[in-house]
Length: 354
Image (cartoon, one colour):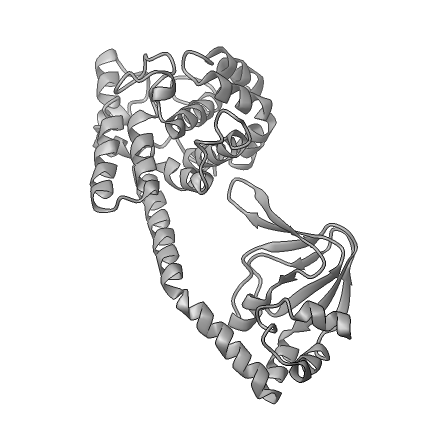
């Protein structure tokens, strides 16, 4: 029992209780065992229990859109699910046993019983909740950002809906961007550029890359064939038109996520050798997020059917991307993508046209 109480003291919920109350709380825990590969709790499920790990190791993962990613590892003394249990909210991540894992479990019934029977425990719950409420301003800001993110994707879909050929293009390219940024974060050349939050931000704003197409006339945007040189010049204006849309947003809200969107809109058609548009930027003068977007956009276009071309095979697309390194694309960045190309191909397979 003494060992159990030492573990309980590490919990935010239980750390302030005296020994008598702690003894009573300890009696409401039960021991459970999870074999390797079993799930302790699943992202999205209602928080109806908390766990304290006694022995073993578990992995905490979260679905990021471009794939499930590990957030951290948990071991003896670590606790999961206490705040979800207190607030009756849904799990924010999945916890899976990596080895045979022994835990202490308190479920909703035991928790409610303790609250009803022990005023000291109930007071402790109230204090923890009050502490959580003090952070409500931060949560409100996060909720607002999530609302902006949904709005941005809605705006992008609205622009994209005018082009019947693109289909799942937005979903695929945002996943390519996040996946490539994740790999670049491990590369010495790009580690400084891939700041905390970069991967999530590019996932959120990359769907806006072609939002300027709302200003392109239907006769050009929907033309069932190749554009003439004159028509192509009009099509190219979508980069500046998109930048103008985001410029208005940045003027009113200077958050970095919107500045990133602004840079992507204007510069995702720049080329490494300086022959792109609209500014003919070259090399590292092109923002790194725009270089990522350029690779993702062209990669998806090569694999997709258009009225003027059939889709390329995966093998042919690999060779074309490799051929364009140093002219269209950042060479080291292209190398990183090709090193992990099977992952990008899997994203394409999983996000086919509806």
